[in-house]
Image 1: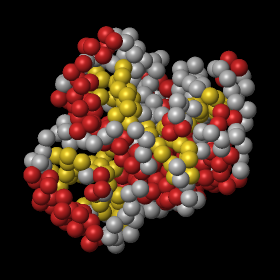
Image 2 (image 1 turned 90 degrees about the vertical axis):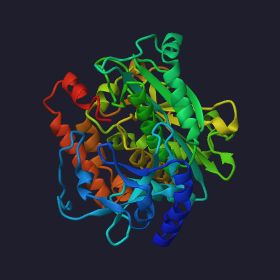
Image 3 (image 1 turned 30 degrees about the vertical axis):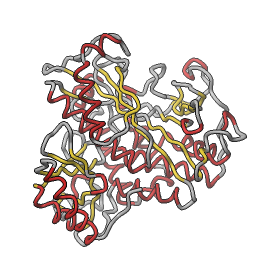
Length: 446
């Protein structure tokens, strides 16, 4: 797992990296972070400034902790408004020349105070703390986030209207998909699958599992790369939860497995479908906390237009073996390494660091409490009537989040309150709008 480094260590790392980047024709480095509304924000520096930026960071206003999807702002009692500054510090362990943007490299960023302390509202820092808590129990998590997106032409019409998963769509966009694949591979990413998805214009890419912070970083880099490749092909990209009314939306499914040393705790155990007791308790903890976790993993008003029954979105709080209608789909796989749990209720508007940090925190709470999984659901829970529906609106999810002492403790007061403020403000922003208005307002924001 990526760890924090001292200023001197960061400066030395940048001095080593700069000549290599220059030899590769890199002129500038872009630093990315994701705000509480799920929007990726960036700053960049010329290569000559990389060492200074790595050592001291670059300025980043704290008001972005309270920014909404439409770039308006909300507040909390502890927010400073226009006052103050933070330092955006690139993590050079993930420094990557961008294959689809010649002359540029990318790195994810942590946020620090002016005094050099970690910013309590840093979402990446939250994910790191949660991963360290898992490691403190002598375990580890392997995680991955599926990336789904819709491509459209300049007029906003889906550019691949062929059948879902169809060869027609794949052939018509063969050159585009090949460039997506080669760009991701040239950036050192381990691509597992790339294919057309169900909705018009929709595709999906899956990457190999890695540590939680690294998986969130990778999700950012993948989305950045897809957007750049699409622009080169004259296409627009949407990661919004819903692109068109009544059509399956863009999920941000989280896959994870809990490990103790080299043993996958979702395989070869005495429990249901090979679960080890620790694996079951961990998953039960996440399942128990899912209504509150939706405020992190389904953070948009548009999320609840996607999260509907019988659309493979996981709208019910239940689990089942290979059940694509359950919020928690257990996957046994063909080998011990492939067994994992997929959380289907999260979407592509989510900040990946918040999602993974929240899931790990809930899983550890379930592990500590020895929670058992409830009875398995086989079939569509909407037809069976045997499972609870997850929140059906952003306001309802925010209510569950506000009641969660677990998430308040895990995120820390500042980050917890900032997330809640943004969710409440966005719920109010869209309270009187039609479904189509919500879709239109969010379609190109993520």
